[in-house]
Image (cartoon, rainbow, N blue to C red):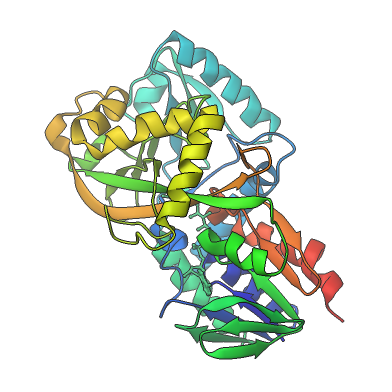
Length: 393
Ligand SMILES: Cc1cc2nc3c(=O)[nH]c(=O)nc-3n(C[C@H](O)[C@H](O)[C@H](O)COP(=O)(O)OP(=O)(O)OC[C@H]3O[C@@H](n4cnc5c(N)ncnc54)[C@H](O)[C@@H]3O)c2cc1C
């Protein structure tokens, strides 16, 4: 029996692949339903391989993941907005970075075009840019909850997957046994796919001891005049920030979300101001303070992002991207997610690529950050082929 802890997109995709190969799998998920954390709270953007460094797993899996998740949603009749995405520049300096991003995307094999202001108007009539924009026709948007529902159904329909919902994995008991809130559960192999909590479970297996997860809160607002956006309007990412910047994303139901921010959070599920702040908060605060001192990227983010709690500052960060955008067009939204960012504590660096490590009888998904939603299907194949199979008879 293979036990997968975590019923997000990564855990469910791994279980689905294993079940299709004929293995019996149990998913242990602490919530009463699947996908209630990052996998159901993200932007729903099916990325197209633009941003990632050429040799990275992210570059490798986001292009294939884009194709496969689009095929999957079409086969299942899940709504999708296929109006693409534009990346726009504010000034000459950003334009230089936009050109470098374009080259990187092409190097990754992504389908991207450089378009001038006139062509931009045909794609996104209200978007503004300095000289040129990047156009990615293959970027699409779904409602992540729809995709999770279809993926779970497809996985359970294999008949080889059992779900233990409302049960929490607590960590290793002894070889072949994991402690859970429902008692000891036996396994041949345990796969840790618990997202924002992955380092804690891994540490009980003596794996990834140099890693700590640092949570960032991604808040969203909503655009009232949805007609101002057709697909996605993104800024060029700032070189000092590991995140993509607040952007406009239209879901298949016509809702335009603006966000997400990347505000240091005080809990792994700190969705409100105080909601989700637990006994770990002092330890997280200490980690944040340490990173503030030793990591310039973290310092850049920590000094700027919290201001976006205030509407004026949030509005100023995105107003330049759309002609005619008014202060009243942006309204509150209850959409919020937590980005589980892995940090290598030996170097105090944020780890940018996906990370998988294995123990004697376990495999741990330690850094399934964006675009892991897009990449989930090929990423699951990689985890199974490169890590899981060698543990199984
Ligand atoms: C704000 C935001 C926007 C994003 N936008 C995009 C995007 O547009 N496109 C994209 O490709 N990616 C995006 N991402 C990234 C994407 O959402 C994640 O990479 C992906 O959802 C990670 O999936 P996961 O299964 O690892 O984690 P999760 O979805 O968090 O799943 C982990 C599961 O484990 C469970 N769990 C935790 N601890 C335990 C335990 N001890 N025992 C049992 N179960 C446990 C949790 O309840 C949860 O269901 C975004 C992320 C955020 C936060």
